[in-house]
Length: 605
Image (cartoon, rainbow, N blue to C red):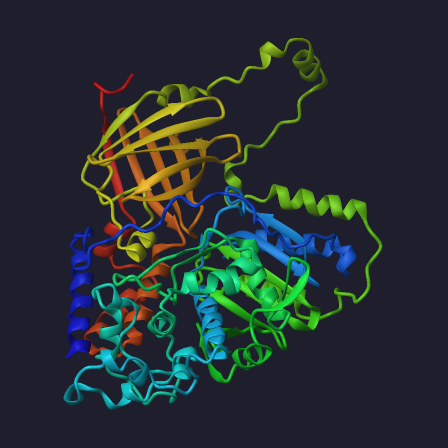
């Protein structure tokens, strides 16, 4: 009965979305959680080294970064590369900087599994304990118990073979996730086959809280986060106050790399100059055994305890949707951590590029290489030049000798001026007609169940090297300052009482019809998401087009995969439509909206 109700609720929510009833899709009230995350580097940074000192060529790593950057199918935000436990390369694609913790989605599962390994080592439960016994007081009375659910063990949760129908999509509509899970049913016998389901990880989180009296964050603080120097940990919770386990964790790129290095070191970590064991070597070996064969997208792979196999012999990865990876490569003693906003759900082209450059030991030596200052400078220059949206970087014309002399003699003459189009748009305010467009990316809104009213008014102000755009939805105003000079400007937004920092870049050009066009990129620096808003100016009219990265098309495929995994007949009816190459027209008007508007003469300066 619970599964049938869950299916009805999921289908009803999708129908509401298709009608444009976006706010409060879930019957469970939205509860703001995320504070403003303090920016900064780790207080316990990883030791730094040159690539050559660790047996790697700087020129080789530069070619690797350039190939990542040139691939149109991926949108890397940050990357950290370790060799022999030393950080040898680190790059951030503007406007990302690596100083903010970012949502890592399902990479959270690997951290949850670490907590489970610690709890097992402490004797709190075993891999073969059944959850029906561990949560006996939460089980339904005997006449309503499902035999298959009673067979689910901790091991089934870890390797995703529980077969439970209750999934992430269903959780949006329930307050008590633990009760809903235990009153659900299994699509097959536990242990029979692999079905990816984040609610398995949630049950492990609930189990840690049940056995220790602490949530995952508090439990891991002295055991993992504090020794590794991972501070200000944010981990989203369910409506009952339990960390989600399967998602919801925020980590900085360097912190992600530390987790991979811990596994590479078989659970050992140096704390204040002394070696300490944080995870048992046996747990590392068992969790990376990859005993369950399955598919990741269209690629055959294997799964361990909340870890994925990686296509390099002996390698494995922590994996989060839209390109959040930690790749551990024991054969060359290396770790790669990547955050992205890629279109791929579980695997993207970055895996192929990593395999190409790190798949053999030919370029990785056991001894230091001679230092190459030229190659080292070229690597640093490349690291500093990377940008997520290169079209926002102005092409700098080389100044003539006369211009350089005049600037030196008469610096006041070099004061930058507004362009003709910027002067024309400056001070203008427009009223927008009915639209679904908001400042938030649609994917982000759906994932958080945090929707804003559509934008009703937009105003523009220009300086020579940046622009300021104010959005009003009738309830709140949001102000975005965006760089026009290739340098991002940051804004702090209060979104439904949660605080997010954005990095913003813009480009002012003209289209093929000669109309001024302002393209605005608003990157939510603690998420994989970027809202792209294109303003087209024509006389007193304005046309606004809303897009986002990662794309809505891929988000719909993700939703379809979640619905399809539940095994519900009604949900499967929606899967074919949602997983098509293009989002259906009526959903596209909401998910990829457009708006038009007219100049507000009273508000325009």
